[in-house]
Image (cartoon, rainbow, N blue to C red; front, side):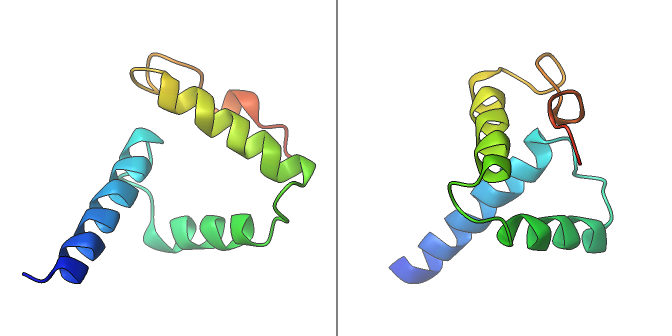
Length: 78
């Protein structure tokens, strides 16, 4: 296995772990992709971008999302 392929595989594993940590492992793929595409539209540094980043930082600090703050409880969708 080449180094590039190993890096690609590692990146996919990490991203999959994030989906699992968010409690979205059973979510519809189209739903996940749509949500990610919406997030990609947020300007870095915008209030919405920073709010989601802050929520993510808290989630990474928590042992498990099931034991810590849930995204739905933190995000105030307009």
